[in-house]
Length: 303
Image 1 (cartoon, rainbow, N blue to C red):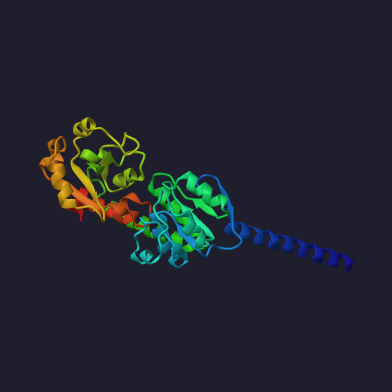
Image 2: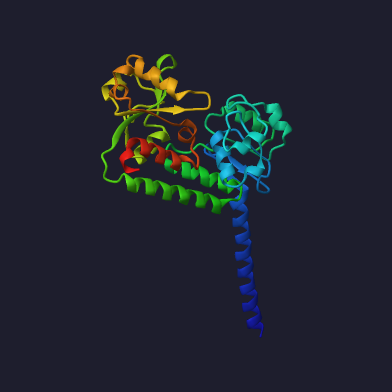
């Protein structure tokens, strides 16, 4: 009898240890987060008052059904339209620290554009700030969605979004399978504004590849190339992203009629197209939509 009691007690002890370990793992799962710059942030509970300093994070929070937790945004956060009902705390590089503090957030999420100084000031004031800046690829987009989902206790929703994105991308690629890739130039600005474009170190380069294109600026870095290089590469198609403040038709005519851009085959053949800049230039759940839109431009015969 005594031996049975000892064995029973031993089993209970093992169960208790396993249960305790399970609790610890669960707590660790949602209480600690290491951001993109290895800064560890600990939470007593999941955040309920979030300030998003970056447009792609705002988009992702709403896609994860966590828009109700957003108490403020940056000036550049404009999607979905519901986010415009939230107060703005200023621009990406110089947000209003006073307004942020007054809102009493329990989490502030920043991206790569937000300055280290801003992040440091906010942390010195005792606020919890995490920086999410993932690799320049579609895989980085998936990782960002997973991380934001982790922070707002929406892991399953994050995986659902990622699965939907992968399915959409797979369907797009099935339509352009075995087709010859089309060379293109994603032009962010030109002329007096300087020649800036999606280079190989941007995740837009990944989107172009997945859409069945060849980025002529793939070997360049830091969003810039020179005009001589552009003329030499002579892309088949030019993409001019449009924004709320831009006019595509006007930009297109300027590009076609201005030297040296007028010498490009794409200008002579009027192979100049537009896409919505926000869905290409923000790593967000809409990136799969961006790939589809570009594939339709590069391979219209398949759609």
